[in-house]
Length: 316
Image 1 (spheres, rainbow, N blue to C red):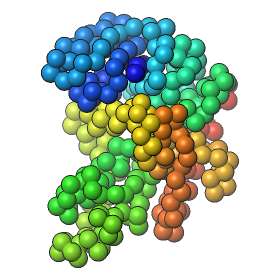
Image 2 (cartoon, rainbow, N blue to C red):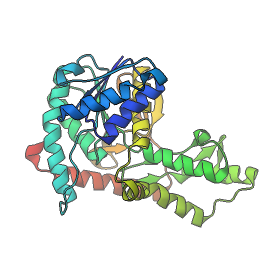
Image 3 (spheres, helix red, strand yellow):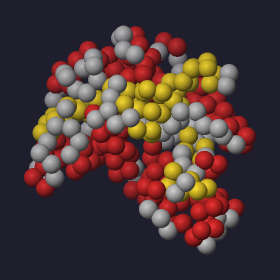
Image 4 (cartoon, rainbow, N blue to C red):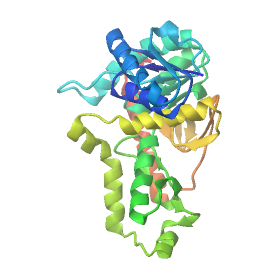
């Protein structure tokens, strides 16, 4: 089982490391416009194989992505001083217009897993370019709010003193400031937060909710301020998505994909719980949201839709 990674920066290389540490796949090929960087990262991670799992990892060119089951796209450009978000989007859109067709040319059967930020918009654009190459949009997905959901569950687990893997709840919408924490759907051991809190004698008051919301919503800002980038969490999330696809696990994950006719929005790429398998998205899972959550989700979708519409038409 072969996995390609396009972009060998912090996110791409950390995803490769996570794959090796967890033994996901059999061969990993790293591609980057900077050949030396891709080769160095691949060699460094390959030297960890004796301490982990027997995978092969190497650098290569787009042609070496042939027969990949999944290709992680972590390529893109950083924001320049004084540059607007729209200008950054425009430049990354130009990069995707070139690299997505190259990936599909050499790995036409691969699922494209987009990690480049802003991930919702870049996944939407990748889907546009993929469609023009004859690839079904269901085979283009983004990491979405996987990391935000993990942050939410981790903080709730810490508050209630329970393993976060037993906390069930989702962050949906934009992977960004307008994301929506679905408090109304959180459960632990089949109980609502209030019910579980009563069992454990732990209160979840409004101040604690607000603090958790802020810690989830602004986590990336704090991490970037402290060390310049986030990559461990997202690298692990990407490895989890790849594992689900390679083994057709039929898992429900908060990835982002294109959703049509969402409450009046004809076409938007947004994070929701999705049933994911070996051929990509099987179906989005609708949530019966509280009214305030639904309104927040629609605002989030409108923000994404507006950003997509603002990009020059010639780019897509």
